[in-house]
Image (cartoon, rainbow, N blue to C red; front, side, top):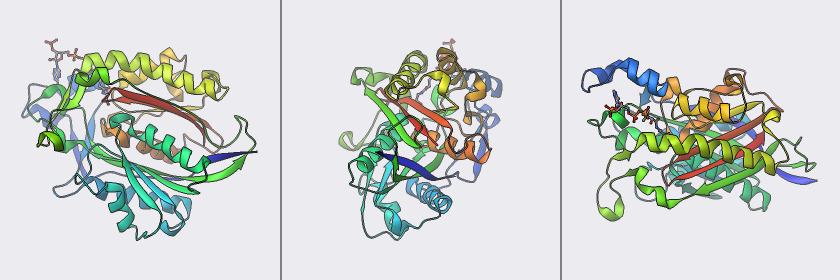
Length: 323
Ligand code: UT7
């Protein structure tokens, strides 16, 4: 017998406003054709004025709780992965906690940029396996539209806003790779690559700042590191690519997603792709894709799912789980 953190609910929320690529043609030297062919992105959602990350997170959390058939009273902890929290403090997670009417347990944010959801899942798994929590709400939520430089065509066309959430619950498994729940994790970071992807402002430097990225350098690291972390995590679970039902990757660029699948020897038929509709939503992209993949009928109970992501830090990692 072995403890497992099993997914019992999933949900997402997207702000109402949808912005097609063509909208950028009016203000920037870019085209719908360039954005589609270089990134796979066709449209993205942007939060309304005054709509914050914790607002998006709250709606996604409610949807996940409803899907799990439980209320916030039955949750022990909330982990929210974000790099765009409403305020410097308190954490966006505690804001969601309050809006859910939850006055017990604990809530905190995790910041690992686009790898944030993978880091948050790993934390939730550790809390459950150590017995500190029985049910954890794990949310990824971002408003990257707030940190775009709207004059920089190489970044502002790539990102979007959104949120997704999972409910994880402690259940007993047999200790084999056939168990439902999180089977293995691989996390990595290397701060030497800070300048490839960062925001040129922050609390301690007294500004909000804008996202800066050397896209082609990040691209190069992404394909190589994502396939490796996914294979390391699979190996830790005693599995290989041949066992995978679904890759649910961070949705930054269709060419990265295709390159990673190819390196792993997997056909695109086994990949959940949402980048065309959402752009890069950083820590929200994996839970959004999990929720949409389930809604489309792609991800079914018992399926072996591999999530992988890379972002600023650089920070990257993968989680293998049986749905
Ligand atoms: O989520 C965190 C991780 N982030 C990522 O994974 C993003 C990784 N990087 C990428 O997705 C791609 O590198 C990009 C989509 C950002 C760029 O694609 P690329 O094939 O690597 O193009 P590039 O950066 O090498 O740029 C090619 C050309 C450049 O022009 P020159 O120097 O060749 O004349 C850019 O100035 O494309 C130009 N360019 C644009 N042209 C039209 C850059 N942005 C645009 C644009 N419209 N929006």
